[in-house]
Length: 180
Image (cartoon, rainbow, N blue to C red; front, side):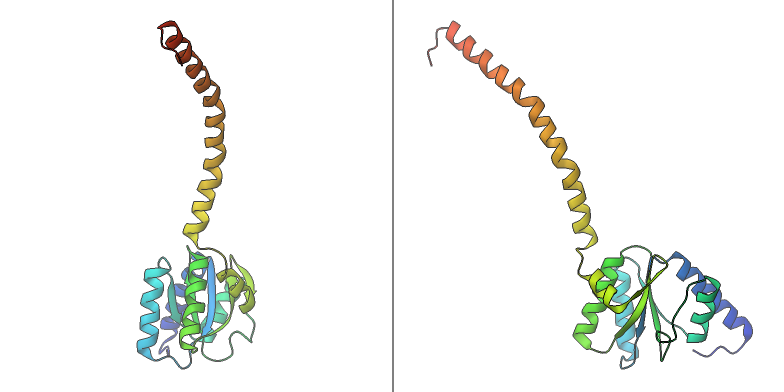
């Protein structure tokens, strides 16, 4: 994307700055080999499946300006060649899984590295992140870990009461003439 005026470049920097500031996960990918249709489909998939994740193809010079303004060091290795930013402010695990799955299917997307909560991470760390259980699985495990102790407490408190009621019923049946 060529910027015809300095104002266009300034607007691009401001837009990218807002996106990067809000992102919890930023991935740098080399998209060479992908057609425009492939990129469009990937963007749609990211938006649907990774809770509004975005993919932006941006000039490396703009990326450098934005990351310098945020005091985040972006290595020259990452910015070597064409680069797209894939960002999310929500489901970091889901996004990393989608990118790695897409790469396994097409073998056309090269993961260069990224930032997780403003900290630089390499491609290997992103692969490890993708191996973690998804957001829903982690939330269900959290709810279960909260629910089980409470359920056990209720059972411990109610068992003596239940046994007491059972004993009272047995006494009642014996007094009313019913033999066990």
